[in-house]
View (cartoon, rainbow, N blue to C red):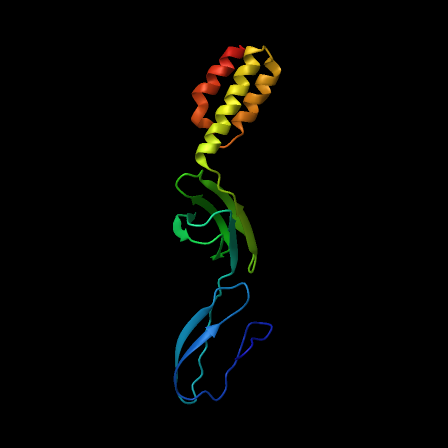
Length: 178
């Protein structure tokens, strides 16, 4: 073991001749290994740049789903998944048959940073029934001539996920208000 000084410099003295693997480690940075050959009385200078990394910690309410992090897909078998990633922006998409896809954008901005993401998978059929119930509620408001409430409910509906699957129906209801 050898620690660096304040400037990141380090020194080894009296190393026997041979081939060695030098390992660079620092919390919040990707481990780096370099192979080196040392001869008797040799002086070597190794310049290296360590890559800052953080962790993405994904918590989910189910197991056995697919997680895509910036186009790299992984099968996740547990409710907690941890991925070490370089500093940067990440787009996460979690998917499983019979459930709505969940999408999240996160940033890791500094070395050693942990970003926790909570993903709640929702049953696609149950959510479809929920949206259809909201459409029915809006229709009843329009039929009862509660225009302001219907307009507010239409705006609320458009803020829901996957509402665009019902764009034709919501447009028809909005036209009834005019």
